[in-house]
Length: 169
Length: 280
Image 1 (spheres, rainbow over the protein chains, first blue to last red):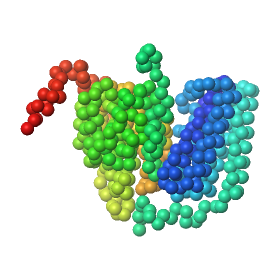
Image 2: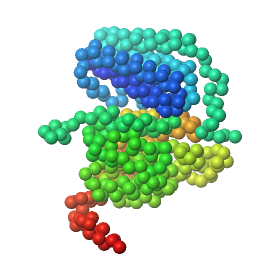
Image 3: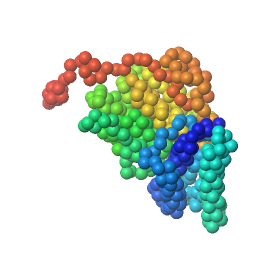
Image 4: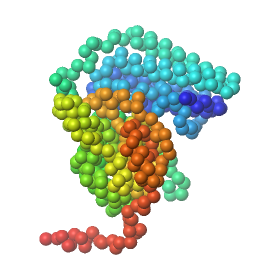
């Protein structure tokens, strides 16, 4: 269940928190992939982190905020903000196609989140702002889909590791 | 506080060191690290007033990833080292961290007595029900029917129940968190730090390499439906009868912590006197 924001500041504070959390998560993934020598995916996650950080900065500038506003607790439909890729969904051998699938799902969750906020908005200006945020997320969905179209699908044996951490036979 | 008495403001990033974790991508311990740093920022403790003490195991690498004082000790002895540190330096906030193998098996005896002594510190266990660093052996919290190459058909041994053991042994604060809920974990850890006495925070932290099925934990975890209690018997009944996936503060007791420093009322013995006693 979503707790609808009551003011534009509250709505934008949620949008900011979503972008910041996504940026932080992508940066963590990039570092982890670098550590495990998956350079290509590390670079992709680093790029995603940059985009999300840029979106967060844009919100700060648009709102004229110098300091991060306080965020009320318990506003997300699940444990984490919708645009954060769940930690456990990455794999050290994943390929760019996988990373982009996760990014696509994250953007779609964000779009659905703002669509729901628009649906439950208590006044016109809030609904308009939520719809605008939804539209931005829809553009991001389309952008990631265009990237997916340019990368080869994952190899069938992508998870094969000649020196695996786990022997199952 | 700084020199002019203004409360200092710290961000979570200020508690993260420049060392990058070598945990497997997807490991729950990443978000526990994030939760620890957020909790410290929430409490507002300067990094130099905090010590993070650990034993051995994947999760026990955590001190190096913070900017606090750190001690990466020997297997199972994190609580012993942490207790000694807190008694010697009551001014420090001591966080002890590790995994289920380190804390409940090799360090099981220290766990019981740390709860019993009730020294004011916080113990965070990243529980993934497996020994990950040594490639996937069953740990004390592994389900008895977990079938794998090293224990075909499962160990058949009943799993250890850390929260009930902590409660029965005298821990003054007992909570369960989930690494997939980093903000919730941060709140639990902050509450644990603020609560006097020995605080125990068990965090379900999936091992995606040796227990990939634990990715499903997020489908089962839910906030505890009841408010925390200070009644140990009531807390014990709740913990014994839940499904192991209720998260939140499950017990917040009122026991007086082990007295430290001047409050202990014991004479301080100069270290030189002790050294002289043991001199050859």
